[in-house]
Length: 502
Image (cartoon, rainbow, N blue to C red; front, side, top):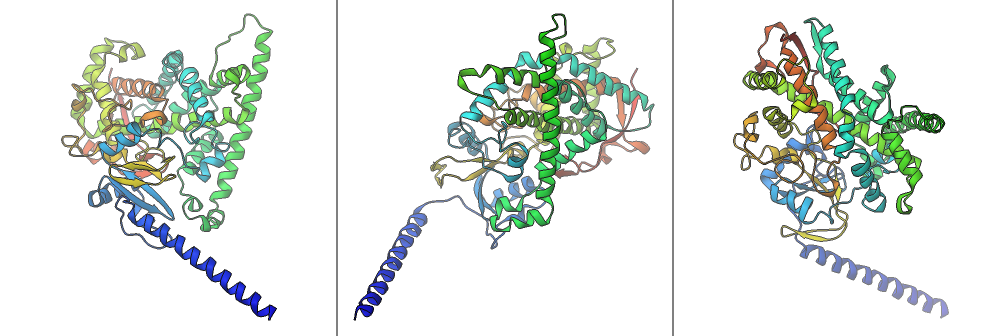
């Protein structure tokens, strides 16, 4: 009898729990069905829309947006990704609701390499990010600090020009030279010296390739083993270890140098970025402590942003000038007039070069280094443009699509720097049809640094040399195919002949 009662109680309890679960499942489903989510393309099991993204996701997402609208949900594996492809959507995310969309999702590869995302670019929103961003803006990348490194930029640009001169009219790999230029500038500015040799160059290349790789486990968690089998996890760990060993040695060298300086009254006390960060660490402003890992993470940020994206900008601008001889000739006329016979264009002279600045803007419009910017994540539920967006939704802005939108730009596929000559539109994050550096509180803090290198390098190459394709090919024959990783590069290196203009 007792056994029967216990059995009945067990059955009754089980049925009650089952009914409660069904009830709450029904309530949850009903609540979801009442929410209005952005439109979404049909997806496949497990991979979602991953198969539709292809090798150039910014192109694919632009085409999808034509069918599904300027705000849509694309499923990358099991992760829903909100994609914004219009000025209105971009402005609401980056300005109107900037605080809601200011977080970063934790991504496996950057998290491993950047010391648990203690950097600025990939760091989740919070007190640590606010303090590190403040240090970057006020101490590392302020206008005054950027100007203080003018001599470094001019010396490295002169060194690049000398290498081109030594080619004596033979074929020059300008892509490689631009990478060397930006690497040398960033090394001297950040670490105090250059690191010649293939080991450091290869390490930087592996860093950029790995940061741009797709981690399957980040989007389909139960397939995380694929990253181990493919070797991606091992490669990521190796790069993190190698850079950590390098940066440990750099920090130790700077600490020893600082100790030596204190005992040397007449020594040169000029500072690089590591020196500045070590000073901030010692000061402990308002109780905030900058630990060693944070210093190393910020230096890696500067390498990633300051080398790859900057050299890519220069590479695409020169490519467009080769494709458009009319623009090249007009730019050379401006450079020659302003230079007034100078052997090399200085940074002071750049301010007078309106057409040069228009050329760089137009190149950035067509060839945004990070076409989808860096992923964001919503911190709370929000109704956006009539759609319900849950907290924790990942977000990308298709900045490439904004730069090609025919409703915003006349003949958007054409390279026409003149469109910027009498226009107030700029790249500083206030005009949402043109945001190559992002916008809002998570916009790139290194705009001035990047543009300073861009302007000086492009101005001097075009001023001093006539550039042409080999075998007497016309500019229209230059292959402009791209390849997408963390940044969008030329698929093939830029190989040109350089003839002195005077």
